[in-house]
Image (cartoon, rainbow, N blue to C red; front, top):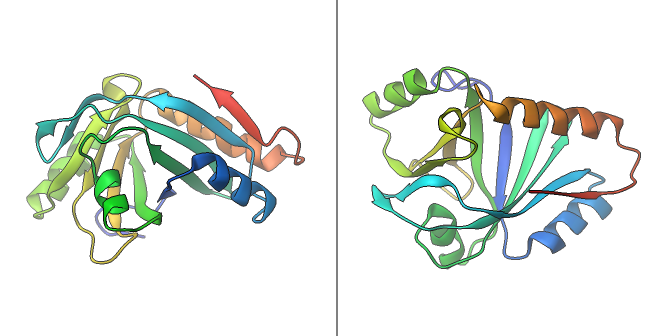
Length: 175
């Protein structure tokens, strides 16, 4: 449990081939089903304070209470995902903390000296997310995600689906 952010809710993996990653997690790890979003373009996305047209594919699944997120960036626009891949890395890039009090936790993090690497929103103003540039080694970027809007329902649906999953229909396309 983080004294600043609370409990880790998600591990986020940045991959070069999201389809291969979903197959691996399904066939080798037994994790699924995956909810796949082919093309996501976050609103108001900025990288180090500058606008960026980053687009990505995203897949979500759960293993118990832990959500697993797979991200494949689809273009060369600036982002922390691109930075990670450009360093020759692939795999765990961030841990995410979810909150319904986003602005207060965001302001607290900034007050403690955290710097925003990139941020944006999905699904409206209650879908904000920020990645703090606090990486000490690969896999330690911190994401803060607002779940006071529609994301909470989606994340609960993904978790419930995983609890009931019988191994059929491992990849479910959304959006």
